[in-house]
Structure formats: C-alpha cells, structure tokens
Amino acid sequence: MQATQTDNASIPFSNFEIPDPLSIPTLRSVVSQEEWALRCDLAATYRLCSLFGWDDHIFTHISARMPDTDGKKRFLLNPYGVGFEEMTASSLIVVDEDGAVIGDTPYFSNPAGFVIHSAIHMARGDAHCVLHLHSPHGTAVSAQPDGLLPITQFAMVVHDDVAYHDYEGIATDLDEREVLVRDIGNHGCLMLRNHGTLTVGENCAVAFLRMYFLEQACKTQILAQAGTKPPLMCTPDLSSKVGEQGAAAFMPGMGDNLAWPAFLRRLKRQNPGWDV
Image 1 (tube, helix red, strand yellow):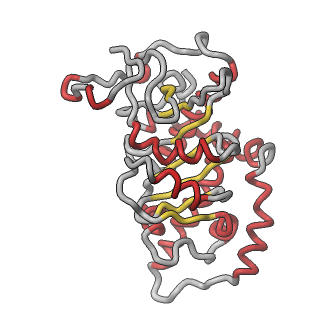
Image 2 (image 1 turned 90 degrees about the horizontal axis):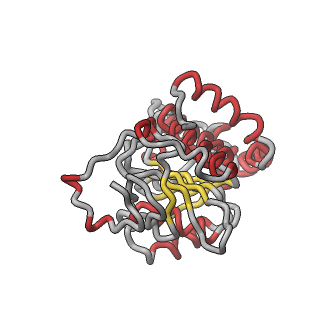
C-alpha cells in the first residue's frame, strides 16, 4: 500500500497491514547523502531509546528537521505502527509541519502526535531534533509538584535548563502549539506535566545526550525518594555551578563527538541493522 499525503481518518485500520521495516526496499541510493546520514542517526536514536528502556512501544515520537531545499519545511518521523526497537533509516517517513505524509511510503503517520514536535521545530531554529518520551521515571517526576529536584549530579547538569508545560490532554489540539513554544522558551529540556519528558538538540546526538541526563536524573530521583528519609537537597547556587560545568557536553562538536559514537558502538553490538 502506497500513501501520499495520507488522510489517516480514511484508513481502514482493520484491513491495514504494517510492513516489517526490514522487508521494504532501502532508500540509501534514492535520497541524498545528507538525508541518508540524518535517517541513520534518527533511526539509531529510536533504537537507543528502546535499548535504554525509555520507549512506549509505538506511542511517542522523535523527529528531525530535514534540509530545507525549496523553502518548504519537512521532517523525518517514525511511521505509526513500527516499534522503536525495529526502526530503520528507510522506514522513517517524511511529513510536513502538520504531520501529513509527503511522498510514497507503505506507512502512515500519527499527525496528532506531531503537534508537540511541529510547534517546537517551527519556533526554534536550533531544534533540529525533538525527542519526546513517556518513560516511567520521567513521567513520574513530571507528575510531582516540585518537578526535577537538584539532588544528584545528573539532575544538576540539566536542572536550570528544564522548563515545564502544564497538561492539556492528549496533544491533538493545534492551539496548544503557542503555549508549548512559550513554555519551553530557550530551554533544552521540557517537562510535560503528567505526561513525560522532551529534549531538543542541534542534532540527534545532542538531543539524545540531553535526554540521557534528564532520564538518569528522573530515575535517581524516584529511587532516592523511596528511602526512609528525604533526599539531600543541593543549593540553587551549587546546582547552577554544576549546570555551567556540564553545559559543554551539549555543545555541537563536544558530546556528539565524544559520547554519540560510543552509544552507536553499543547499539551495533546489541541491536544492529538500523542503517538499512
């Protein structure tokens, strides 16, 4: 089944078969080298999120802005129905700013889930990758009144770079875009209250590294709060100091050149095949 500008409302889901990503032809020789490299990085990001146990099956998104060659904004996104652990470079779909599919593909999109991503992509020139999760620890911290606490080094590295957005229901309302953009501001991390976590980056590597620290911070917070005494809180000044010390990790050319290759080597050992 080929889909062009798919209208998801018209798809008879009971009769629709989701192809195995490894069964579709590779796009390696069809797209530009720049697009292929981006596809490989984004597919790897999906698989890494699965490897770390952060995925919610098929129900969240990671998106990447494609090169702008004709003035039109296009983004790479996961096809609806394909799991994070099985994502491939060729199975990723191209969507416009409203989440509608562009070009021929055997897959379709979930435009409602792209509301969050499109808002941030369109408002932030530096948000080339937007990574959104529903992990248990991240969601648990998002539901706490005080949010992320400066109780670990993980947390303090990102604490001052975390913004908050109040829950408005499942993200299907386009009117929520304006509030999302206002709430995230220039921050690299966003806590979606009662919902989950989100990070942005100049590339997939930076967005993933930010999420690594944010998710580690959330996990250790939940573990620390399980003790018999309240966790030791660090001062705002100390938290800001640690944030400044760790900020270089999220600069393009730093963490993406140091940490990302090691993440990819780990992925190649444990779940190879994303780059097809």
